[in-house]
Image (cartoon, rainbow, N blue to C red; front, side):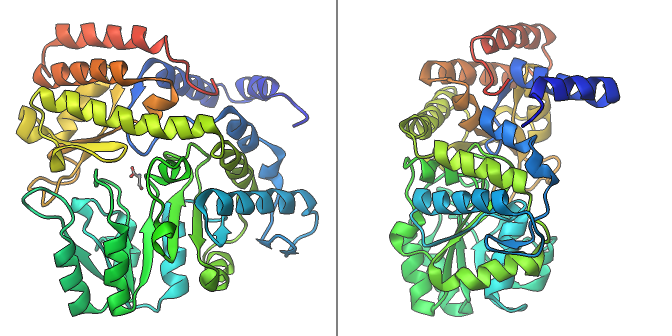
Amino acid sequence: MTTSETSNLDILQQQDPDVYAALKGEEQRQKSGIELIPSENYTFPEVLATLGSVFTNKYSEGYPGRRYYGGQQYTDQIETLARDRAKAVFKCEHANVQPLSGSAMNQAVYLGLLEPGDTIMAMDLSHGGHLTHGAPVSHMGKLFNFVRYVTNPVDGSIDYDQVRKDALEHKPKMVLCGYTSYPRDIDYEKFKAIADEVGAITMTDASHFGGLVAGQSMRNPFDFGFDIVTTTTHKSLRGPRGGMVLCKKEFASKIDKSVFPGLQGGPHMNAIAGIAVTLKRAQTQGFKDYAEQVLVNSKTLADELMQRQASLITGGTDNHMMVVDTMASYGLDGRVAEETLDKVNITTNKQIIPDDPLPPLRPSGIRIGTPAATARGMNEADMRQLGEWIDRCLRSPEDEAVLGEIQGAVETFCEKFPVPGL
Ligand code: DSN
């Protein structure tokens, strides 16, 4: 960079005080609140540097060594670094780092490896699947024949016998696991065996826990012979907003053609530079320690909430997130619970629960996760404190004195934990 970040911000302040004020407001919000949305995180300072860099200026359609525009000596270096590091971190044969984000990444896989109308098995949205896993309102749900499996009504876990029965009946071309609101680990061995029985491609959408696979605190689907793993880069991995398709060599050419020119034009090279530096961080002991602490913190927070009689879907967590049934626990729908916690600077998101009788904008629960809080250095004792605050707020949603007291305590608490990059 030829100009410093500070001078660029000074120019922004002069040129556009409105946007500058919003940016400063967001900085302050991030500093003075506790971020518990499981899909959010604080990226590394060097990622912020790449995102605001001259790579923003460059068009790079194609792939390293095969571009459609000149002047690619540095973009080629960056993309090659990102791909090589992705392969090393995730122990896979091929990596495409160009998807602009999670939806494009999953669409590229379906469109590259399957034909419209083909059958894909994936988890139902209310049980933990993502919109791009074939929700009827999504374009993918209309284009492909999604068979949606659900969790066991007794304990909320995946019913692998039912998944197998569904697979034998529907003969999918692809079996997909990896979820957006399922708080348990996945039995990859079972999924692989089921897929092999029907000759299906195996795919994991590891968007939520990709950073924990990278940091080796959660298992890697490639160790169980999976064909495709997708992951966003901005959640537990702590990188820029983006997506990656990781796969076996046999799928490499189809995946690359599907991403470009099939689905996208110019890749965002500033984000790809950010992915490269994130994947360097991911290979450090510091990142492994972080990934381990995310899980310890998640289990501790879940335990604290349950000790206070909160009802968690599946009765706990194996990963970085938990889903609290706020209707059952506190008689509050998820929207009221989210808004109540917002008042004390604790950010969560309203969340549908399996077979939720309530609508998505006023569902029965909230979703909570520990990647961002852990990135600020919070530990088990801090999780116990957070659990107490969350529980007290949700038991007194209309008591302004209690909410005011907790909001003040949260602000003071946050001063101990600097936000990375700010
Ligand atoms: N928005 C992401 C999440 O919160 O899980 C997925 O799209």
